[in-house]
Image 1 (cartoon, rainbow, N blue to C red):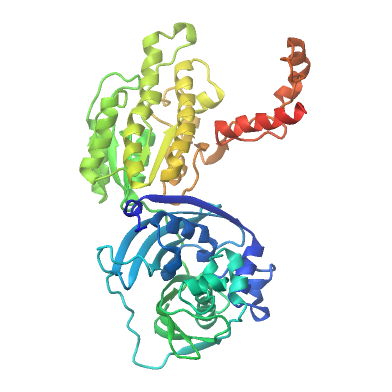
Image 2: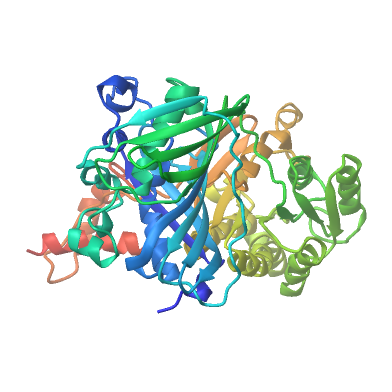
Length: 587
């Protein structure tokens, strides 16, 4: 079967792997660490070898293999680039997302290359590392694709500054494969012969781990957290038990180039090595290259969102109808004023005056972003109006108007934005709920209903978007705005600056955020998460007939208890939980 052309550009993941300190130690032992390097092998003051990263996401590599349809009998690791953004914690969960970016054709006799890029986040929310992997498929060439571009490292015409010798054992692949790469080529003699080798070969990434240890020992001793980049090309196979040498040339402060040799033959087994090291800069969340749409951005929260997104590099569509607090009227001035502010500070923005209350308006807002900037990466559904009345005074038109802007408006804009995000395999959508909806507020039945409706919309979209790396969250801001300025005590109003809400809102819209389906309160410097929690409950009845009204009355305390309550990610989880409760009760 030929390589699958449809796989190029399609999102792969999320692929999540849980790991503990034991996995970290097992990997270190698998790449030759031992009693002389207890910092990698002993849980006390344990540190993680940076090369653990690629072994830890071996399942993601399996997804690349499956998606590309390469011939397994001819596959080898070709090239690997790792860029580190944070040191790897000793335990947690790693979530990886990426895509196949290129196929290169070296010819029918020489094979093909499959190139994939990915990013990996830790469960603490930090983006840990980025990977560009090239798989060399010896049996898939000759399909008429472009040849691989030349990208060779030029080594100095002098002896290396450092040479590190190492002696992998004959059993090294048996130990290394326990870290995830259980490909038969490294353990099964029959499979190895079928693939053209006299016996099972070393994992290229096992040799890579030896080289990583050598580089750290030589250039950042005792400080693996200072490794910032490791690149290499795997050029020849190596059999277990063969000694190796890693040759290192220092090129400038914080930079070196390297290669690894078969010490018996002098052949290069890993080439084109690049190593960058030093203190990893304190991360600053940026939105360079991202396009954001903010509705209701002419004043208040929306304006602050738009300004800060632009300040951090995003191109922004500033949408605002320019109406009054109750939704009547319209003016281009508010949106134009914010755009002028953004451009004055060197940012990129356009104004849009369409109403979110219609599907045509929502589509026009997103089309404006596509026309001006080519895409949409971020959508903040912030537009809103107020028409407060107690229920008996709530005329249908006031009920509907508020739902049209808050709930229907989010639908009208999110739908076309979601289509753009799905096609590209990336997106961030932020809904705006309210404490009035989460907890209730007198005289705001229309507003509260719309705001809780947005939580339901988020819960559905988080599931629809997961496959495409579209994350959907909701914020409940407590901030001064034109909707609240004359109903809030002045002393409290001073403390309710929108600037206190914006940091959390923008984090939820960032590439660094891997959270989806969450609701957060934010205001006055206080932040917390709100969630629907379901109590463990009680099973009533004999399984043959429904419980009586009196059974419910006597069991209401247990029914109402939230002790040992839990959150559910989906309807399916909750129904499964009920089913698992009912079945044992009927036995």
